[in-house]
Image (cartoon, rainbow, N blue to C red; front, side, top):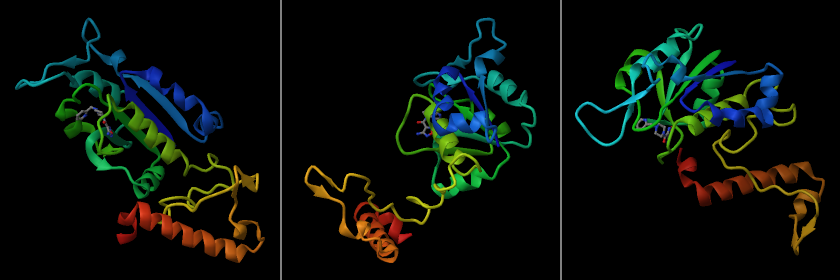
Length: 223
Ligand code: 4GX
């Protein structure tokens, strides 16, 4: 999969060089290109923002640099083009899975009070939000999309960690997990987990998943 990310703050994406995502790009399982929108500004001072028509607080990103940056991407017509926005549909695991099947994603990160609506009309396929809170820009949301989507790309997770086996993949939250030591600060690991009886372990985990989901996320059960 190829992901192009358009931003006014390319330095923020150094985070993607670390961790499993960095490994996936080194292994060529995933190709990520960071594009600096400012490089495409035709303004003599490389300006990329301006005042909103009709007045109001703050600035908007002007359409020209964004339009030229997107349309300079090889194969942009066929890519799935996303604008990260609090006005978008909230990202959920089923959408992550859908996106992971696309060959080419383009993620546009907005700043200030957003972007000129004509960019959305002309070029954007979908607006996606990562949650009902407001950030200073779309960079962290774009990284959330890259990170969550990457888990479904073959070669990113190890053989033993499947993308399917965790919270949300079965509409339930994950059961509690324990590692060594068997007793820590007076707290013991539940006996069933050290019993060696895999059937009982499975049963216990399913029960625990239901209990924790009912308590913390009853909305997931109703669905
Ligand atoms: N999930 N932001 C977008 C600029 C903006 C402001 C208003 C449209 C309308 C966000 C989120 C998010 C901050 C990205 C504001 N765009 N993006 N940016 N939550 O908060 O995705």
